[in-house]
Image (cartoon, rainbow, N blue to C red):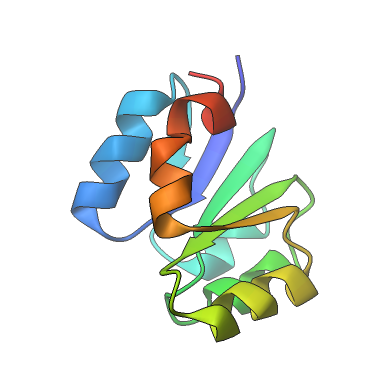
Amino acid sequence: MKRIVAYVPDLMDRSKVAAAATDVTFVAKPADLAGAVADLVVVDATRPGAVEAIKDVAAPVIAFSKHTNREAMDAALAAGADQVLARSAFFSRLDDLLGG
């Protein structure tokens, strides 16, 4: 079972992540990702401070963003995210990505 830590502030998105993962902990702010003990970290790259927080994460990171926000997607990759997906692709592949 993967231990997943997620910074996903949107409640609708959060409910989808929670439904797909058996062991997920949501953090309230991006800075909380730095000390997270996890097998996987999920980040909404469109949120203020989220991309910067990726640099301090020791676990693999999957970030997502609106497909039109190329800047956030490129910044997440540059910060060290292992995968960066358009929001639509992330949620359509959620079960496979989170191993739920």
